[in-house]
Length: 129
Image 1 (tube, rainbow, N blue to C red):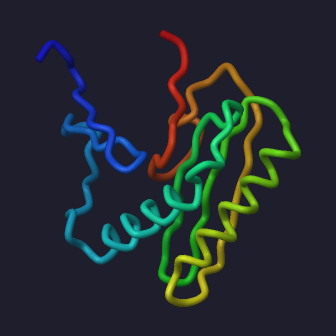
Image 2 (cartoon, rainbow, N blue to C red; image 1 turned 90 degrees about the vertical axis):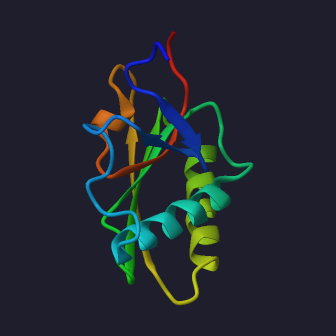
């Protein structure tokens, strides 16, 4: 195929086909099902609210009662902070029971978002060549 790491974009996150990158958790495990559900809900919550300033979103520490999302902005923006708050609200509205939703926002450029942010990638804007 000519590509060392063939990646398919699936529901806003990358599914890596390279075994060094692929998840080590079995796809049908309860933890993976919960993470998949949270990723799908966050993709839905972000729909229409992604600005060019948003560099990346990851999911970290997913449990049935809590979820931590990491957001990376290129520059500080009150509008983007409000969009993040709206996305978290919409994410919670999609849950069948209360989920303690936390967010960590990092602002900056000059480093790779998925290497800088912990957890599972949900969104990553295309940067560079």
